[in-house]
Structures are given as structure tokens and as C-alpha cells.
Amino acid sequence: MPQPPDPTENVYRFGAFRLDERRLLLAVDDAPLALGPKVVETLLALVQRAGTLVTKDELMQRVWPDGFVEEANLTQNVYVLRRVLHAHGLEPAIETAARRGYRFVAPVTLEPAPAATGPAVRRAPPALSRRIAAAAALVLGLTALGGATPAAAPRTLALDPDAARAYAMGRYYWNLRTVAGIERSVGYFEDVVRREPRSALGYAGLADAYTALHDYTCDEDPCPPLAAKAMRYAHAAVAREADSAAAHTSLGMTERLFAHDDVRADAEFRRALALDPNDALAHEWYGNLLLVRGDPHRARLELERAVALQPVATATYGWLARAAYYDRRFPDAIAYAREALALNPRRIESQVLLGLALEQNGDAARAVEAFRTLKRIGGEPADPGVLIAGAGARSHDAAALAALRHTIAPDPPDRYAARDLALGLVTAGDYARALEAMRALRFRNSTDRAFFVLDPRLDPVRADPRFRPWTVP
Image: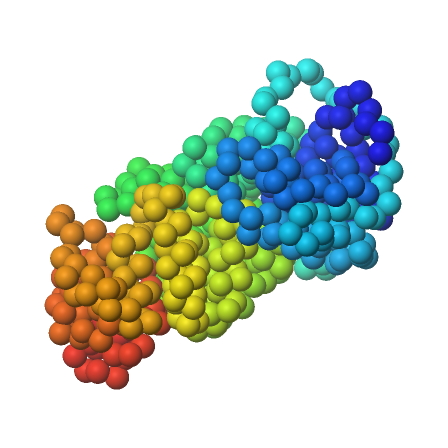
């Protein structure tokens, strides 16, 4: 395919799809799809060289220039793309050349990009520009999903174009689920409030931002100012528009986290879903609530609905992997953890869950490999050495058993290492030391304890009355 002078302005069409390179936006029948930037970048690399083999090395260098990636991430991106393309009638589209790479085989046409509108802005570096441009795809995709069933769609105030753009950018940065991204989202949501003070959306966005900041930055110490802001903005959102699903979703999470009222939170999430059954975040957070309340089966169903509505969502796949793990659906947990890691290879919790699910599924060797990856990532919530020893103990590895039995609880205590040590000792059959380790456990909150109670590694001792304080909700 001939390359035009300025490839950053290309728009490609194939089947019902339209791929805008400048905006890094994939649409079907002109409706934007909510795909992550790395997935769209993979598609773009293939489409730009349609009909030609693109090697795995070329794709990995293009999509992950920082170099921290495994081939499984690329494989997962291609899997997601095939699923999306097939769902909209384009198959075959991507061919695999065994052990070499991939080839885009569907017919592709090139059309002029739409003329840019508005004042010129300083262009960000290409990778950052593409991540920012994905905001429109993400939020417009959610909006389109919300409108997929018009009869159920709530009557809420429409945002003017500038406010809608600010809201889209705010949601993009919020959905990165990083402290820096969430902090940046605050300014955009404040802009929505200034432009559309009667709309619930800006207030709901601010509530979600301060809720997430509290969750990510406070850790052991409560942060009353952040909690107060989150609750104030959530109530303000509902006060502006009582029929806003986003407002009730925000209020539900603040009731759960800050008022510790799970009954009210349940009611708010149900109200949000009654107003808009296609609200992916409401399904995700309701699934989280069900999981914390000890119902992994129903939690998994809600989270599966969330990812069906928003096919590429790192955090949702991470929660879904956790729900499947606690529901003893280990092959599903493995698949969902890999989905999350394909989108964010540094997501530590998903890497831990991948290893744990592999361990419970009887694949100790791959579990150890997954836990070793944690050493390259670093950070909480994991102690790779303890997890590796626990996986080895499950396969009766003598060295692993010895390592567990001679491990001393960390001082000062690390709640993750202490938890995994206690559960590893259960796996090793050293119940006396496991009891001793459990008596020393300190849970940060009710969620930490709920997840410990649900953990399949406790299954060998659930009928043992000595362990009842740690096996009963």
C-alpha cells in the first residue's frame, strides 16, 4: 500500500470499520469502539502494512517501545482484535504466520482525514498523543453503549460540545487508574462543572476521582478530606439529576467505602443499573461489592457484564480475574488475568492472581514463572519469594517446603507477605505454624479480611475448627 506524505493524517477503511490514525480511534459504522490504545496501536501497525507480514519483533518494538513486554501481551492484543473484528462481520482479517508474526488480509482503502477544527495546539510526543486521543474512543464508546437500548436510557442533561470533550478527557485519565492520571482528571471534571453546573456528570466524575485517590494514596492512614470531597460531590451529582446512572454509581461507591453502608451502596448500584443497564462502571462496582460481601459467583456475573459492555478495561478484567479465582473457576481466572496483563503488563495484582490461579489449577511450574515476573515489576502487593515457595510446596518440592518452614514473618510486618506465608504454610501442611502466622495477621479493612476468607488456599482447613476465625466471614 503506498504511503502518503504525512502518515499521521491517515484514515483507513476495512469492512464496516474506520481507523483514524491521528485520533487513534477505531469506529464501526461510525460509532467509536472502546478499545485500549495498545490494542488500537497493534491494529494500526498491521493495517498500515496490509497484505505484508509484520514480525512479532516489529510489532513489539512499535507498540511497546519501552521494552517491558512479553510475547503473550502481543498475542492477547491480536486475540482481542480478532474478537472485535469478527463480532462486526470482518473475518478473516488477521492471519498468523507461525512463530513469525501476523498479516492483515482484509481489503483496506485509504481516505483523507477530516480537516482539523479549532485552534492549533502543540503536539505531544506520538505515544502520549495516541494515549490522549484514545479518550474519545473510550468515553464515546461508553456513551454509545449507554444508548444501545433507547427505551432504558435515562433522561439526563446533554453536555455542550466543550463540556463533553472535557468529560471525555477526564474519564480517559480517570480510567488509567493511576494516581497521576486521576489527579489530572480532576481539572477536566472541574471544567465540566463550570461549563454545565446543572449536569450530574462533572460532579460524578469528581466524586469518582476523589474516591480513587483515597483508595490509591491513603493506604493504612485514612484521608478524611478526600473522603469528604468524594461524598460531597456524589450527593451533589444526585441532587442535580436524580435520574443519572453515573450519579447513583458514584454515590453507591462512596456509601460503601466511606459510610460503610453496604445496604445503601447495594441500593444505589441497583438504582444506577435500573436507570441504565448498560453502565459498565455500575456493573463493575456492583460486582466489587458482591465480591467483598462473599458472593464471588454473582460478582463474576456482574463483572462479565461490565467487560461485555467495555471489552477492553484493565481494571475490570483484574477484578474479574479475582472473582473467578474466588469462585474456583481457575481456567477463567487465568484467562482474565492475562487479559488484564495484556493491557497493562505492570499490573501487580493481576500478575499475582495469574500465578495463584495457575497454582490452584495444578500448574506449579507456570505459577512459579508468573511469580518470578513480579521480581522484575517490583512493589506491592506481593512477596515473590513467599509466593514461589507456596507454589513449590503445592507440588511437594522439598526445597520450597523447607523455605516456607524456615521463613520468618517480616519485621515490621508486611500484611501481604504475612498473609501469603500463612496460606503457604497451609499448602505445605504445616498447620501449627500456619495457625501461629494467622494469629499475627493484621487486616487493613473488611475488604482485606473478606478476600482472605475467600482464598482457595484455605480450602484444606475449612473444616478444621481451629481455623474457624479465619475461614468464616
